[in-house]
Image 1 (cartoon, rainbow, N blue to C red):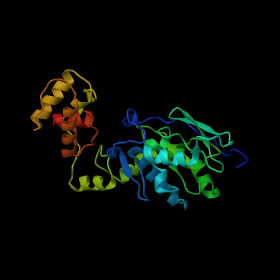
Image 2: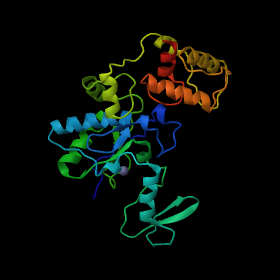
Image 3: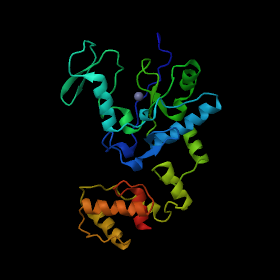
Image 4: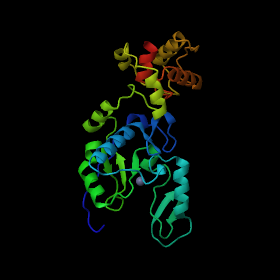
Length: 279
Ligand SMILES: [Zn+2]
């Protein structure tokens, strides 16, 4: 492409649920299956599905180049990286640093992000098939912002877009989600969402307000709120020594409790978990 025809690049707003994760090693509950194969972080999945639907209505088919070009595990990113980069100087002049060493892009290969450094490793990026085809790219230029997406590198990677809207889906995505309802706060795969919907599991309504005043607690923390949560675990039938120490045992019980209540299995005492504990 000779000239930049579009320059819509905005920084990624990082969703709260991704702030402390290891790229490429996302908990399955944070990922959602995409109908054409592959997975995305659940908020990116909503935004992608909404955009695919709108494009289809305009006669434009949007699909990933392959099911591996949405969320990529660390290991798959590493395999791709090793196939394209070499420790021997290839003379291409394109290098990356990985595991403390300098790697050289092999001749005729397209660049690839270092393992753990790609937005694909967070389930936020999609590579679109035949992105630069005129009708498709024009539709994308006119619409990505509306659905909370942007490019990362233009014009060299017209296929690579990432979800930039953080925890606040755009109006168009919210409208799509309203028409395609899922249980409040459900993450998980489409199959899991469907199972939960059929079981008519609703988010706990009582005590939701009270839960808002509680801090999010994770492994390794100590204190009175943890003691309170441990007492509530006991009350809910999960025997737990209330010592105010969030150790692996408490985390394990929290995960069991989350699974049993059909709330996202995060291993953290987050707002949905507080609400369920207090209900
Ligand atoms: Zn990409």
